[in-house]
Length: 142
Image 1: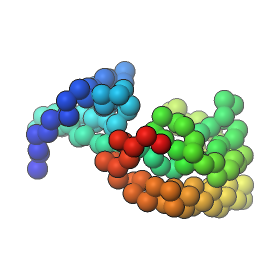
Image 2 (image 1 turned 180 degrees about the horizontal axis):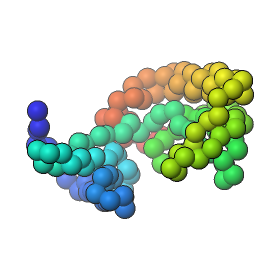
Image 3 (image 1 turned 30 degrees about the horizontal axis):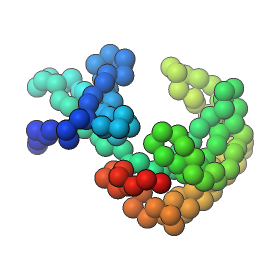
Image 4 (image 1 turned 30 degrees about the vertical axis):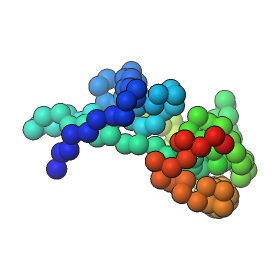
């Protein structure tokens, strides 16, 4: 069931450049707080507002896409705790997305990846127990 919502005062929406599919939502401090997904359907266009949590387990790739860093950090990419780095297994790029090649290197990567994600998550829970809540910690000055 559709529901009409209003953004808080001074929040704004900017299109991402993707053809009418996603727009980013920013708060009064110019922090990205979420996105609006635009979906065309037979019955008309629908819009879904998705809010992001300030903190979370994140992943960044190096410039040559050979190594990944798993960390706990802010929505702007600031790392508060680095769980570790791992070398990416063999992959191909299909329609702009990384597709890993199956095999023993992939299994080893997944095990290490899961361990690093769990480490970052545990750190996050010990410092920001409500970190997955999109309404938590935005007013805090950490």
